[in-house]
Image 1: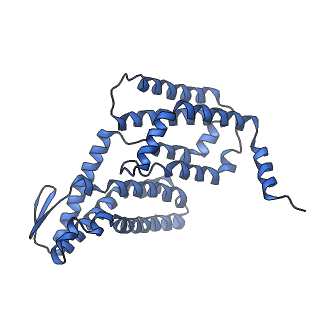
Image 2 (image 1 turned 60 degrees about the horizontal axis):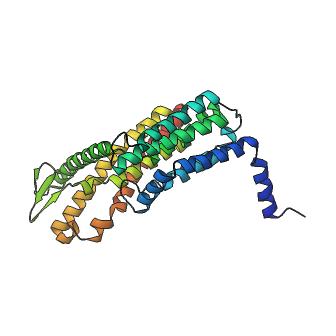
Image 3 (image 1 turned 180 degrees about the horizontal axis):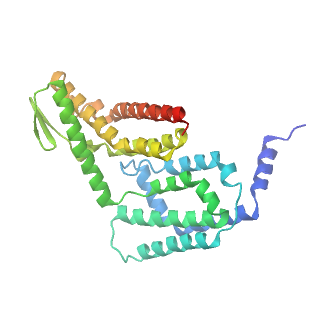
Length: 301
């Protein structure tokens, strides 16, 4: 008779319980204890569906999935890398200690940015310590993907949002002009017959832009082999984000002008319709990916 599923699972777990893996497990427990407070705060913010944090819950799952897919290659040649691993662990620990002692006054977002950065440095240092630099290089994508757990510092996020607002306004201006609609523009405000539309911070589409960026990173890693093509795909994300926003602004404005003005403020399409325009941007991204992939197959590079 064959072994039961429970016995098979137990056997597989027992095989994985090597001294190296047990030590790394203990290291993970220590890391969790040390960085429990910032990780808890980060999870709470992510679960509150904050636009700047809502993607964070998925990052460890995606990283773990890619790590699992490449596990045989990543862990095929492991060794203890004491110097590199210990340096990163100490760097993460020292940075965390500095931030915890309030040497630098920070708001919650920037505090989490720095403490989570410290936590990831600490953990990657442990990975290198127990599995070696070669394993780190082979697993570079899922490991570096973890840096997306870090909340974007406030001053950088403000600049990104402003850039998205300005880019979206320019895209909307082009689309308004192409439609032949009657309008005047004052910076980020468009005046149409009977109402005005402002490309406010809420119209920057930061949540969907982050999602598009993450999707671009994943698609480039899965389907493209050359780094320069991967870079090209990722560089297309910002223009696609502003094009998406421009289409959304003009679509809602057209519906408000020709159907009902509620489309511009209280309509469900305005409040919850972002997914429709995100899918448009994603379709455009997939088209660019298809072109890059074809060129890669044609040249063999």
